[in-house]
Image (tube, rainbow, N blue to C red; front, side):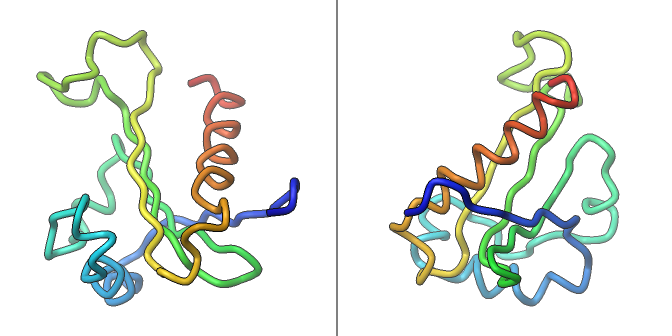
Length: 118
């Protein structure tokens, strides 16, 4: 893995649902992500959650979301300070596993969140 990697994070859209469904059918994703239906328009529009398609070299390969831990009354991270964000992610393309991409794109998103005050 090279030290500097550039990742693009774009908001997930309804047009991404077929790709997300394909990724979520992968055994390495299903082990942790048990939803058969990726999202609907209402979920994609939920202001508490930011959902992204992550690309490397112009190629979409992962999904990441971050969310307000105080957006739900009984969230298990509600004890964290105001402005705290939770994260979930997976690498959908199995060819991208094992090369440091997960650590790198999570780090890139965390830096952006911290820069914006999380």
